Amino acid sequence: MWIGALVLCHLLMVADLQSSNPQNCSLTCLRQGGPGCHYCRINSDEVDKVLGLKYKGTLGSCIPWPCFQLLGEEDPRLCQHFVQAPHDINIESVPSSDPNLDSVVVSWKPSQYGIEFLRGFQVSLQSLGGSGFACQLFLFQPNLTLSASHAQTVYKSDMFSGLSLGSDYAVTVMALPVPEKWEKFYHSKIFSTRSCEEKNGFLQCKADWYPKYVAVQQKEAVVVVTFNLAPPIMGITSYFCICRANGKTTSRDIIPNLSRNKTHHSFALEDLEEGSNYTCEIAANQVDAVRKVFNVYVKKQESTLGHHNFPYWSLAFLFVFAAAIIFVVILVLRMRKRDTQTKKRIIQPEIMIKHHEDETAKKEEIVPLCGNRKTPPTLLICYSRCDGPAHMDAVMKLASFIQQHMATKVSLDRWDSLEMSKEGQMAWYCRHIRDSDFILVVCSGGLCQRPLPSPQGVPKNMSEMSCEATLHSEVMVRLVGEEVGRAISGGEDLSKYMTATFDYSEEKDVPMELRPVVRYKLTADLPLLFSRLHQVPLHSPGRYVSIKYISDEEFTEMPAGQALQQAISKAKKAMTGLPQKQDVRLKIPE
Image (cartoon, rainbow, N blue to C red; front, side, top):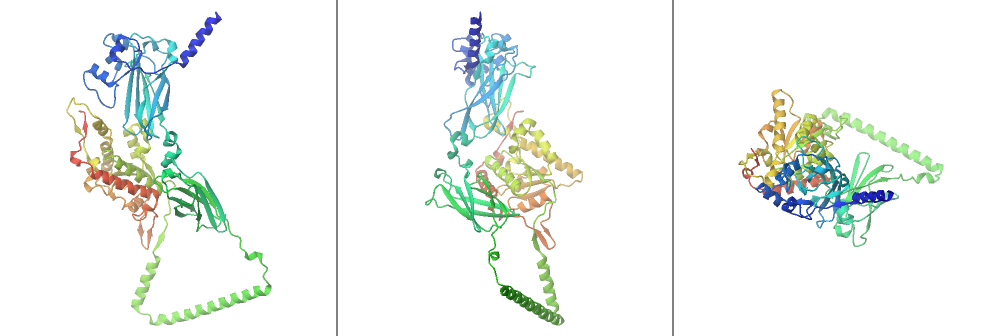
């Protein structure tokens, strides 16, 4: 008796470790229940044969209610039951030849509730914050009945390839058949693909490299910093170092001599204040390079005056000499005062006017901006996705520059894709339009496009579906336009709403709904945008506000400003190569 129980326990343990990979079989073999057709992948060609039309698109081989379409013709009762959602979903990265892309395989276990009616699975993968979508369909034989012990079997999908490195995705595993009134037939999981460093190694990813070894030594008044250089295979030849303390910033470019040492380099930090604690950053002179942060404390130099014993006659001599200097200064001041009183009697009126103008000019001074807010202002940036990735990259670089160097908290849909996927695009935009202090709409040619209806019955291709995914631009313009119209009709202030164009956009790219609000031309109007965000005048009688690294001449001195300038230049080249705006048509089903 106990021997039989041991055998049964062993069989259950083997079932726990059993895994099932998809089989390459036809739909005919699956329906007839032939050998080797127990757990089959269904490709798009098989689906085309059943439906009688070319069902191409992002859904691939997945169709709504596949059980009824593919297995319900001979016996409709096969698809009238329900099974509960799969569980224990795992995502495993698999090797791929492309170093810039990742590949994964999804595995899961079926639920034991209703497993005897299980007909297959449908696995879909969605890119968070993007339009990428892939789907795979797997079916069992109609005459196959699973028992409760098969709930420990691990089922696997085919490989999902072409995934971006370091990106977020959501995978959904659905149990078939799907009932009409049941909410627990699928299970979703969010995961991230491997980073460049995880897949290819640290030495093959320039964007992830940063100096790991930094040593600081002080020799008298000079601070010497030693750091490790990037491997020669990366081609990095220059670096930069920035130090901040007491409201002051010092920066230095570093170009090491690789012929002397290819592994380490030392340089001196000068013009540092004694007794100050500096926070420094060092990185490769590349766009968006990772920075290594380290601290430098500049020691005070001890004075050598106290180590010598001066004789008393020397102190007396110094005292007499100082008294003589004071006497001479007082005498000179008294003589100048007498000369001034004499000249007042013969001074001319035109000299008085000139003197008054000179005094007025002297009162004009550069004053630093003193923030009078406890929290930075919030800014929502809206834009069009119909103008290509180069334009979207320019918008992202603009948002990064505003948040880093203009003391403003920026909200951007591509930075908050996970929250947007939970709330929905319209709910996310409505909440930020309501809660943000300011709204900036970056206008371009794609923002003024309007969708045209496509002929009925014509399927959508990939480009049309991609363009439909960006229809939120038109809805976003209407939402902001309604708020502007409501403010105008109520006599409210319009300072919350702003529009901006890059130098490759035109005046006509601003939608009619947004033309009543203030308009900026970037990057020339960055100081005006800063003035609006912080509610401070740039000029006042005798004074003007100077904001470092914000003007059109100085913003490229910072890495974020250089990245913004390069992104605008690339977008300008890409936009000039696009077809005319009136030829670009968006189609949506009627």
